[in-house]
Length: 212
Image (cartoon, rainbow, N blue to C red):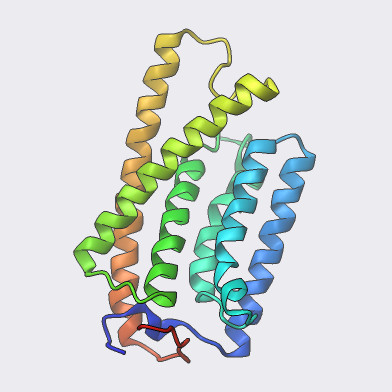
């Protein structure tokens, strides 16, 4: 195991697992609250994030094979912020939740990148890690756009098809993709920073991966 790997910051120790599961339980409660409140697509999205985060414990059949709690906490911030801040007005400015949406999309890519590096034999250089997170965020943004369109046509929601003209919707969607790309770059840089700096910090118990 080299210092350039995020595998060095994963802990099988109980404190990390307890913190990780506690955060995931809270985020799950937030997602269920969103579903009950009528935000079906967003609530489902948050549950998908939770499902991705619990892949390692499920795959290893070990509740302590958890991502670093810092990564889970970072991924939970957009969901919590959207639930409690979206719609609030401060100084005459109403928060729509658009920023937190694409930060949430970026954190999905961040979680996937960390899981790939930690729990699989895959190794990424710093520059490729930034590129991977950025591209994964753009791909996730595309899936999110399709999910919103499907919800509008099948469930009668108004995420995209809210009465605006086709040109306005397309323009807004393109700006959404621009925002997602920027969020992806920022998430990639964060991953590179964490990837580099945390691996040189306090060591944690590693998880054995066959073929690593």
